[in-house]
Image 1 (cartoon, rainbow, N blue to C red):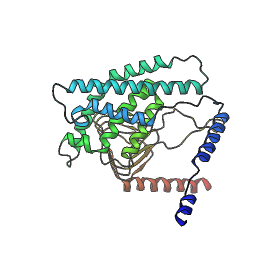
Image 2 (spheres, rainbow, N blue to C red; image 1 turned 180 degrees about the horizontal axis):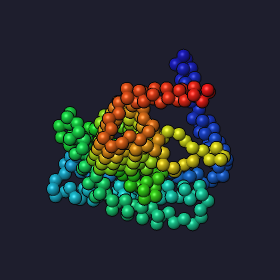
Image 3 (tube, rainbow, N blue to C red; image 1 turned 180 degrees about the vertical axis):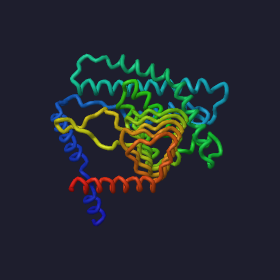
Image 4 (cartoon, one colour; image 1 turned 135 degrees about the vertical axis):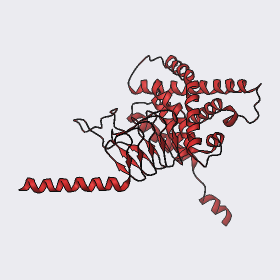
Length: 321
């Protein structure tokens, strides 16, 4: 009897929960004037599979099948790439239809638009692979703990984040920003590294350790740049229009020129320029540009801030007199 009571009290009324969830969905669709036509967004699960397929096609011997031979490798790459691109085309088509519905556009040929983006993206894959080879070399040469480029490829979260970013940035530039943003968030979840797909990053880029790195949408990074964990390339402020809404699309993130090293915990904010060959020390808070060849340390920035504060205070004294 006691056993039966326990089963009864622990039983969930699934049917009632399903009904309540349906009512909530219907109300939500009604508020957004989407009754009977809920939007079909790109699938996160499908994009994860696509990323795995594209990564395997780009690096079949390391990220693909472990049983490949010289005779089978091209077939594997072709088959894997075809499947990934077909699925990618469907996700881009979903994004196109979603945006068309949001903007009230009727008759948008999303099938053709998705096919064009797929074709142009596929044509960029050899160039993406060449960029990634430079990134791999930079990581191997820049980290004494790395025993081989192969180790970097299969073990380093920074390398995974760069692979996903190169893919996302190409799609972002070709007109699939939602799919690109979803890929960036998949990468963020997997690696702890948050790179907006709009960020422009040059060759031979290396993120060491990586956890907590944030790179904003309009950041521009040159060649042979190295970042360590918890570096932020962010925006200093968020300007608003006359109605108080955020102004979007303006260039608000740093420019990092060639051959720059930024150490752990550094925060660089605003549309400032870090000159070529500069070194930014750990935990530095920087909101102004620095010339090429600069070495910026935390104590130096603190000293500059105190000097500016003292000068402002002195100026206030003079103005009061």
